[in-house]
Length: 236
Ligand SMILES: *Cc1c(COP(=O)(O)O)cnc(C)c1O
Image (cartoon, rainbow, N blue to C red; front, side):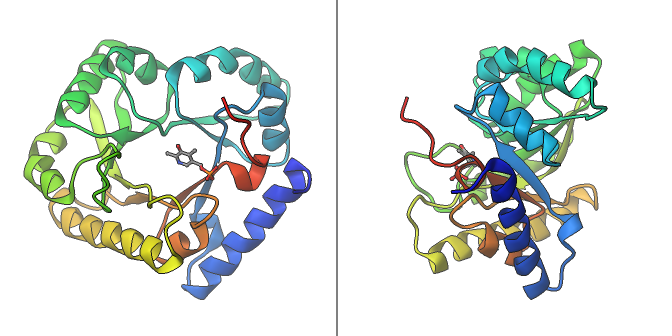
């Protein structure tokens, strides 16, 4: 691994290569730096290297780092964009709505309703993605594809949540063609749902350090990279 800044340059090169392969523009794809277990200093290096999207898995961890990061950014006129990418417990919905620009992990109707309530009391329209468990692994959070279609109208009717698209996680250690099939499945589901929801329902958040090139080729709008930027995570 190189420095954080070298790693980001390398990720950008690979992302551009994958975009070119599929006739897309790299600027249209958002690179989210996944910063679970990453120190504030590491995050600030990523911001100084030109990334502005930060993805955290836990509300508490994000809150504990946030003030220092905002202070770092204020001096440099950087405006970080906060992404909640981990499983969200209902009792954290209030803090999540107040802290995140985009929640990637709406994984039940109940949670979506709770986020809707909290967004209402915060006077905010919360942008969010629906997490879909495309691969059907038991250990994973997310709607099944069939379930999303069942509750989709109800999700769209929430007044304080703007449902912008879908998110998925490919199986860990999947073979490349297996990950690709998951990404393609998510894209096809989005295309079906988009006919109902309209053009604002457009975003696909898919692809991590080991599989983001395939995700981009299959239509990812947002990739979420941790290890490829910051190196292996220390075990916690
Ligand atoms: C940890 C995590 C990532 C980043 O994983 P890497 O393999 O380190 O790139 C992306 N998305 C989610 C939901 C994660 O939990």
